[in-house]
Image 1 (tube, rainbow, N blue to C red):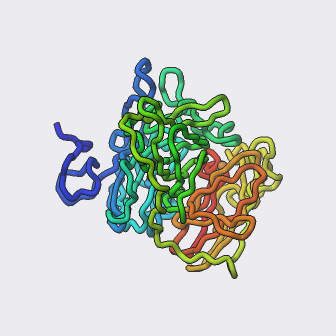
Image 2 (spheres, helix red, strand yellow; image 1 turned 135 degrees about the vertical axis):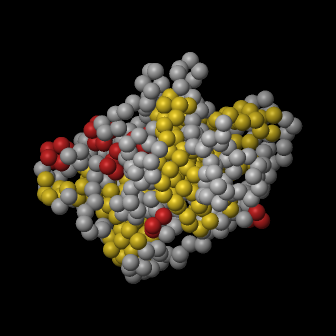
Length: 460
Ligand code: C2O
Ligand code: CU
């Protein structure tokens, strides 16, 4: 019996092969958010009830070519929760940004919303709900959006793969724990899981020929875990961060990927035939393989270092004359909020804030206020030095516009949309307010976001 999740294979001219389509040909492809049972844990365990787009975790990788128009209808079939889709890292019109109450009305259960916008940038992006984010992302609602460079501009690789890094907090019967509002997670390092997956499996595996070069798109969809990855049996170049190509790929031995960040790496598989090349995650209690590449013969030829990916068309960012808006991050366990932080317009004592589930503040304010953190005019360049006075790392994400880090020597770092700020650090970002609208600026550990670490920036 055909149903709404029926997979359409081989339909010519569809940029979104495999996405469900409604009956009646011209309708937009659908992402339907609904509960589903999938196999997450090893065979000895039961299947896990997740929330999934079109029945899959992670949601299927949407793949388009740069310049195409993305057209997707969200259908909310979740039990009793509003939802939306935020297209993370995309430069798009504000009304397509998917933030309920700021850029669109929440999508009620049983309702839908049509997203439609042109894909300006090639790169690795992702999509996730922006409502009840701790719960909805932790239950499995997230997927990758790859925008390919035009054919002639693609790097010369033997394979192009998406690796979604995630973790799940599960009980011993493989059920996702429903402690989404736990104060401990909110006030400490966020909702860390206890079961790490790559593409929802315990490990990614692939057979390769020696000497093959792969483009691997690493995406961290976890709500709190910061991955530190190391490599064995391969030469690795970092080619892009958060979707945006680096000026020149740099050879690396390690890469740190905070929640919501992406890293595109180009890897040459150099392990001997019969051996395994590995990507491993460095954790507190050891180093664990996340991806294994079984190398077969015959031996390939060593290649030259890869060329840079073709850059996207970014605005000219000049610091001279830019306006600085400092951001001080406070709160959380070990430090606590200063007395008299403001929440919803009221000065409150720490205890009352905690009772309201608020543990963090930006510039003395927990959560969103009536006025934006920055009111920028279109085309203005804004610098935000961020001081992390908390005892935890945060992954600061700006919607709609990429920024560059202002380094200590005044030079500019790579274009990014999410920056990790470790405890005690001062890190400064700068961006051009290039698209009008109201844009979220928040910590991408949703437990922190919901408990105070979110604000917004107006461009008009
Ligand atoms: Cu992935 Cu508000 O963001
Ligand atoms: Cu945080």
